[in-house]
Amino acid sequence: MKAAVLVRTGNPDKAYEIQERPMPKPQAHEAVIQVEAFGLNFADVMARRGLYPDAPPLPAVLGYDVVGRIHELGSDVKDLKVGQRVMALTRFGGYAEYAATDARGIAPIPEDTPVGEAVALATQYGTAWFCAREVTNLHEGEHVLIQAAAGGVGTALVQLAKHSGCTVYGTASTHKQDYLREMGVDHPIDYRTTDFYDAVKKIRGDKGLDVVFDSLGGKYLKNGYKLLGSGGRLVSYGAADMATGGRKSGLRMLRVAMGFGIYSPINFVSTSRSMLGVNMLRIADDRPDALKRTLNGVVDFYEKGILKPKVGGTFNVDQLAEAHDFLESRKSIGKIVVTW
Ligand SMILES: NC(=O)c1ccc[n+]([C@@H]2O[C@H](COP(=O)([O-])OP(=O)(O)OC[C@H]3O[C@@H](n4cnc5c(N)ncnc54)[C@H](OP(=O)(O)O)[C@@H]3O)[C@@H](O)[C@H]2O)c1
Image (cartoon, rainbow, N blue to C red; front, side, top):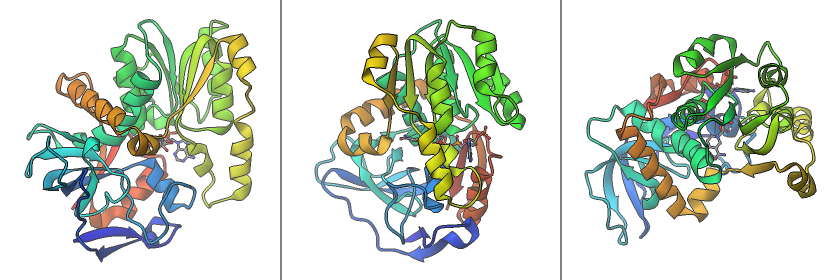
């Protein structure tokens, strides 16, 4: 089978080679999927840039989400069928014609589901669901800030928060502001030209936010935490700010790391605010039942029309470098899909 292999870190045009690789064989708890399309995730950009500690050593096949048909089942897998159309969260290995993954990270999808929408459901909607419905519960009337709200996970969080009846503050680059409004974001904020902390303060005064979803890290997280009111929860699930400034820079990473700030449980108790961390790789590895619950929830809401993924770009595998460049350059809105 063919796979797009990350052979070196750096610019996307030199980073990948299409290579012949052995067919994956499923372990007892796994299934092998014949891949129709795979998705890009921001973690792939971080891995390609050498900024992602969880990435496998090179040469590596990246890829967190695929859509396709079940090709082969491991001996313990009883609830899936060969030929069934599915979406899946893969623990790497998705940039390939065939991918093996834990069956509990696979969810059947209707035959007529558009491939781009289906690809978005696994990792980005799965992450958003886990953040918004497992580690914290959104309640009607809550005021919620979503950073990078026009991205893949951001779009999913906006849809979940609006469904829960929340007032949504969403940040994004200038050219994505109309998209935020179209999605129903109550307070779109251009954080490239305005300080988001001041913008939220101006609207909300001293009442504070109930929930902040932070995918940027560093000073964004610290200022987001400062915006929380009593009972507020901050969910940290990314550090995209590490990618700012082009080439990998130790100084930049140190500055972002120091920007997070230092926290004490005493302060959490005395101010009744909390901070929660999410890493879907850890969930996929250690809490497969929670992952299954999450993916089932996502598919259920998708089928009911509550969740509607936005496909921001579809590329052929030959254009993988272009697709990566599009995501890294902050031009993209929603999900980026790559077909074989
Ligand atoms: N913890 C987990 O398990 C988990 C799982 C999935 C994703 N994530 C994280 O969730 C975030 C969103 O992931 P995604 O795949 O949905 O990507 P995405 O949001 O579609 O793309 C990333 C967006 O982040 C914003 N951004 C902010 N600073 C940036 C920078 N320095 N360089 C590039 N973009 C920057 C850009 O939006 P603007 O142009 O609007 O600023 C960009 O479009 C990422 O931080 C990712 O690592 C975490």
